[in-house]
Picture 1 (cartoon, rainbow, N blue to C red):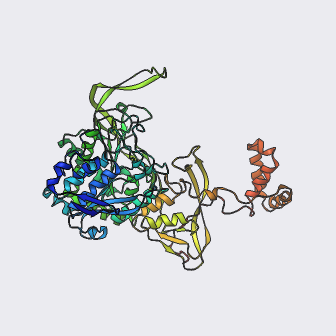
Picture 2 (tube, rainbow, N blue to C red):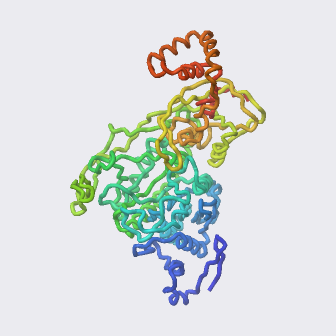
Picture 3 (tube, rainbow, N blue to C red):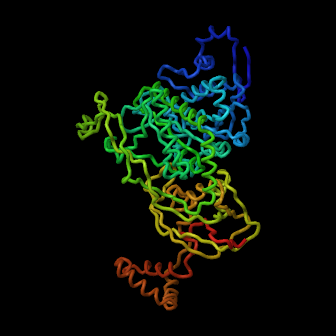
Length: 600
């Protein structure tokens, strides 16, 4: 028997081979440790998923047995546990910078962002055990470094139960979708309200993965496929990546899965609420709030595995394992092409001037997809007495349906040379550093000729979404002028790697901007007012000095009868159009330098 310290400071027990047989029937944890490390074999042939501790023990055992494996602790989760990264590095470098210098590609697999969907947690352990010490994959691993987050949402994974996924076919127990703050972490990659996401962003920016796979289990319609695939939407990617994704990477994964006798189809994102797949399916648009949408801002090829909730757990794990293996196979055969495409895309993007910030589905473009589904029917529910949609698994079909997989740009922006972020918005400044942006500070108080936006209109949701009252339909107007900035305020060059992150978070009308997530709500509240009995006489002077304002007021009263009856509203109208009204109200506080004369 041997004792070896584990990463978390505890001890791992290992036994001599002759002792193994007598120990096979010991407790579940020891059983997890001593189970055979056989390539590609199922961890749990039953309907059980690994607990968080069991999964970590499996990875710790691999680290002990194989020097090319390492568990690297990173930052905390919200419940205080350490998020760890398991790395298989054939050359035992374990340095992201050095591996990129050596021309290796990085496959990054994230598991348990929704711990109630645990298929990837089990499948990734199987994949790690397949690769570790396996001569068959030794050469392939010379070109691909495999990084696995065993469980991202540790908080939710420890909150195990059997009922929160009411429509899911196993396993017997699984984690909960929300983390310790009850946040859905797959909506947290702009706002970063959790320590979990803060830690994962740190890992991603260090390892800079070429390919990222986020493992999930689907909801929604019923159909025959065990696995569906979300590829990051090609039309919103940089064109070099988007073309390779659409024409090479994604089709090859479908081909490899077919050879493995796995039924896979594009993610079944139906058109309209509760519509059936027969009506057509559309690509899912993963904006930056999602992990894959966030990683795509940094020119990563991103995929979401969505195994089908109604298929048996063991088959879902098999399909997830086969998909992860297929992604690895494609990478090791095409690693030089993938690296070149990313390098070229970054070179082009750094000097890009026009950036799309919003997209809409192009329903004029589609292809016919051979879809294997089940016949649907509607009957009266015995519970509600109303029509209810059902699927009949006894009546499978195979037919052509419309697959809408093109998006068109619905809004774009001309990027500035620099963004200026006043230091008072410290959460934004911190986010810029966390995301690896080059940020500089003014060393003296400085007047700068800038462009700035005024928020003219926006809509706010009536109920909170992931801890925020989201804004949308944001409309802005542009203004120019000299603004004083202070020593310590930040200016950020747009011509750098990651500029899509800058544009899609700092432009207020981008769907996942910091403004739309409510980070600047203080500017939406007026701070100063007036006393009518004093301002009434002053209003007369303002009207006399601005004759056109009287005409505007007359038109407003004509168009708004209620205003004509309300003296305060009329005085407020004059106040808002006077020099006394605060200039900072509704002025978006991130500024743009668009010309060469920055004032520095």
